[in-house]
Length: 492
Ligand code: BG6
Image (cartoon, rainbow, N blue to C red):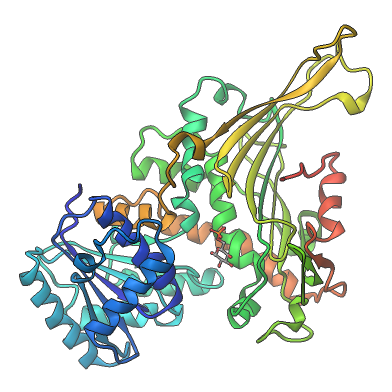
């Protein structure tokens, strides 16, 4: 158990994220006994709701989304929940919230510890932070923390502006910028696989690795988020954050110790080593796609341009493939290929580390027989890893055959591994910011992304739509690797 004695204020309490992820995650922590009884959650949103109605909504969200529901702890759990109708631009809302927090501190013996969780439209992040301070909500005897959801700006200048606003009120170590990929079991495992085994680290460099491939594919389309996605696209939605975070974890040097500062410093060095992609060279390094109509999981689906709130001539990319180069001593010359997209053939996040060829070939007469050594890290939906090796064929005529050593995380723990949000909320209550992104990571990743998005905004892609829903993206994505003599390894 941690000292969870805190009030968590959730802005956007009636929103999708709160319902699908936050309430079920807090409940799971409670159900597993990770929370002491001295905590309260205050939901704030525009809508008028009574505490009772809010509690019922929270319960519904638990029944719908938590694997731990139906053990009758829901009633005692929701007694910790309170609701406050809120207008983020109105002083009176903050005053009312302030007295509510003071009452809850008394009622639950909480020493003034406060988490402000912004699960809502980012245009209000700055306003909220400044008003929290102006109205005295951040002047407390306990600690205060700000949890902030993506998108953190839409380019470097807007991210800087936002950061300056929130930094007027919260110090860097009080800001918890969520990247939910950092809460995933197997993303956290990258560091352990690399640094707790004698086997991989000596080979983890440009002498033995030929390339690394990261795929995060989705079968869903843009759903109801056309408005947001039109301005974002796959580059900002997935690459700037989740994908580059995985690159950093794969590429970083061993940290001095497993402290927040040491780990984040190593990641920052990776971001600093990213080879900038200048606008004139974007096509050499990055390709974009947009889905057309097609068939996904045996169902006919429409193209991106037909989706609601999407421009019928939209230039927004729903797929990105790229070659990311890390110009440092360890990785010089090793491409990190990344790809992500909506409406692809399968929902999967996987990392493939491809090792170089042997110095001499004793066994393989035909080129096709030769299987390189691959280390595959399955992030989702399966969690685990697989090592591709070659071994002797069991036959009198001899020969070789590819074999695979496999570890499946789900079968080891047999119970569901905790949800990403469950871990991240728990870390925030503990005050552990390791799996949240530091401002320098955010700034450097935007610095890398901006020239690409500027080049794409200025040059309309004439080919769009250029991949059928249910495929693995446009042909150009294959070509990106072919020209370097590589290919995407299948991810199924
Ligand atoms: C979010 C993006 O950050 O990540 C979504 O905004 C995307 O567009 C989601 O669907 C993918 O997350 P996961 O955990 O399903 O891989």
